[in-house]
Amino acid sequence: MDDGIPLTVHHKTYEHLYNEKEYLDDLICLCEICHKAIHRANPHYKGFRFPKEKAAD
Image 1 (cartoon, rainbow, N blue to C red):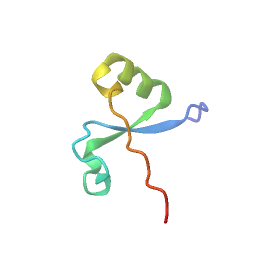
Image 2: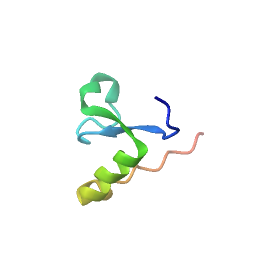
Image 3: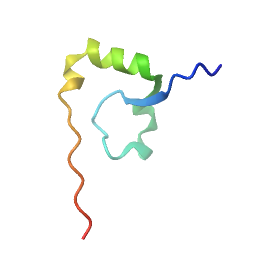
């Protein structure tokens, strides 16, 4: 069923961040609404910030 709500990928932990291809079991697919609800319910997730990308030389 396509209800128009985007799907997102959520890290169960950030233990394997940037190495996701080898640890697919650490990811879960959620609708955008559920993903936001998880982050609201677990303030611990809100503190994570992705590092800024390095400028190309």
